[in-house]
Amino acid sequence: VRRLRDVGEHGWIARLARRLAAAPSRRVVLGVGDDAAVVRSGRRPLLLTTDTLREGVHFRSGWTTPAALGRRAFRVNASDLAAMGGVPRFALLALEVPPNMAVAALDRLVDGFVADAGANGAALVGGNLAAGRRLSVTVLLVGEAPGRVVTRAGARVGDGLYVTGTLGGAGLAVRRLAARRSGRLPDPPLRIRAGTLLARVARAMIDVSDGLVQDVGHLCRASGVAAEIDASALPLAAGLRGPRTGVTFAATAGEDYELVAVVPASSARALARLRRRLGCRLTRIGGVVAGPPTVRLRDAAGRIVTLERAGHDHFR
Ligand SMILES: [Mg+2]
Image (cartoon, rainbow, N blue to C red):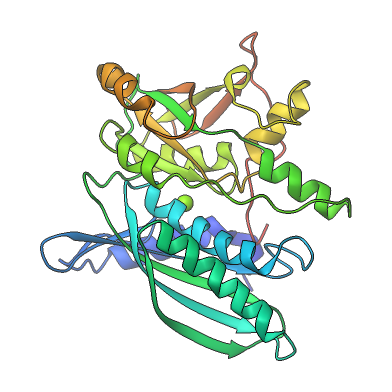
């Protein structure tokens, strides 16, 4: 029997995408395989995405407050829309809740979600509530794109690779929490505005959820290119500066929910103009090169940094 741990999370999804692509629909502009789906219904394209946060898998009790968990559920989903230049408009929230959970705690979770969604242009319009052994929060977001929809495909040789914010901070917090040291999961950043601005100049985008190297790898496969990342250029989160372990950790830890944008040199001036309005830092971390879709991380001396893993896979 072939099991999920044999094919892996991304292997299984790629297989599903191939099966669905065999019977395309005219209303589906972009199906399984990118950060969000793009469908046609009326004049404007709609963006759809869903993601789950599950206790024991994505977080443990005590790592976060109910309100922060609600915000997190919104933000990890909004990140996938932002990665395509989209903004969230409507949300569905499907909850699995242990029967002994305090009503006030569940209220705080939903309030945290609704407040964060509302502050970012999205309304909760429905969902589902079911009993479960563990708390599980599934979100579906429907979004619109004010401008171009940017996919993972489209990167070309010679383009620059940029990342918003910093890397490794969430991974470091998880490592500390897992070692039973104090702390809380930090709120994922909001990059909705940065995403819509970068969509004006980017040829391809993806968000960093599972680890920079792995996620840039997805972008490379979709675009049919390779990428070189300059390890010394990575914007490390506070607490990670220093030895090479910090760099490899930041490049693979995941949960950063920052955006990687591929911008051609011809858009450098346009990028310089919109940089100040992003609301976060933007760092050039490497470039797109020819070759089979791989990601190479190089140190300051130009040597390839070998990685034990590129990022997170739920089944491997
Ligand atoms: Mg994504």
